[in-house]
Length: 463
Picture 1 (cartoon, one colour):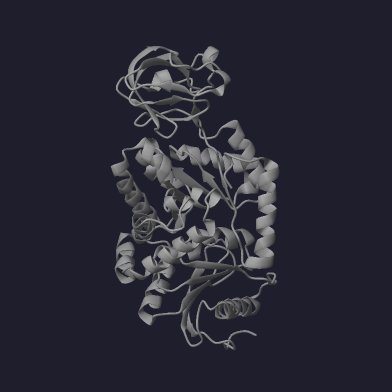
Picture 2 (cartoon, rainbow, N blue to C red; picture 1 turned 45 degrees about the horizontal axis):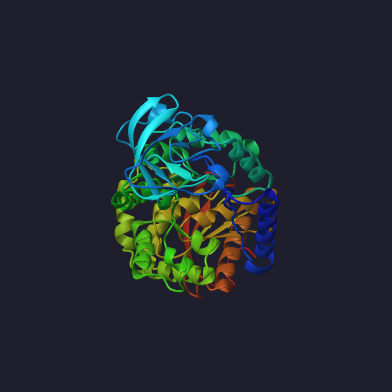
């Protein structure tokens, strides 16, 4: 849900409808994400909100003086970023309305005024977004609206926050503070949309639960030919870290108005998959497009075919060699399970998990087969959709009072349920080798067992 638009009443109805559809139609857990508006810079209003034409080469002032907030014209154009005169310098660029109107800074006149030259013909319009490529801005991570929106998300138990315009690791920590104890299971996905975010990517990656490569705004903030390099860098680092990464914006842009994409767009989607993205995302194609269903179908088909071209053994070996030493116990078990699945040509890996951590590590090593995740944690069953190849399912039975015998019976019952569920959905076939991953006792952090069983409806586990 994009919180740049819509009322709380509208978003509440979307949440309610989505959850009802998940119960009655989809039949499996459905994750809901809140996309924050984020801090932004905008122009002021023109008189009567009329467009004012401006020619290439024309010089004017950009000002933060509030007297021009509703009176922008071709002599003085208002911006609502009060510190712009402190961070910008001559020679820098200012883009308005996604770069449709561009200016070069000539002089910082005083603490409220910048002298600029227009680089192309266009119009000065009301309340247009502004980008400052190559300039480090000091905007806060969250606006007052963002904080209110996050509290709405916590109240409605959203699963993920897509945090816009993240510039540094401390931005993620601030968002966690706002989410608080009640929102501790909400996954924070850092949207990288500017040069600062790219420059500080390593510290952001340490703090965040996942990353979105938001190429639309990024292509305005950094030179367009460098966007693909930034995309590959960020995806690779997320893969090595084992954190999910989403590739987003303008992937099938032409399908907003056309029933078929261009070949270049299809190649773009496929290459994101080959780069190692866990997810690819549609934006305007489904939010306002004429062919939303066709766009989703085209993206799905492209992803399926692209995954066939992945050299899984090579990817596994490379990621294993890049893993930090000594390796975390859970990650070591995940390595062993994926290695076994590759050697056995397994039909699936079935994993029992509380938090989804083991499923995330299994996904990191990119097995050929699907990962069937069985959990009692409703939140984990939803947000684990982020991890590539993971089919998360919520185990319907309550957790019993444990002793060793009851614990093992419960483990076997969950494994059997997961295998049977996967058989019914056609995820696996009868007779497939299934690699099972489990813990030696209840709770998080105890995964240490891998075993192989055949996929049978009456598997000789606990009844």
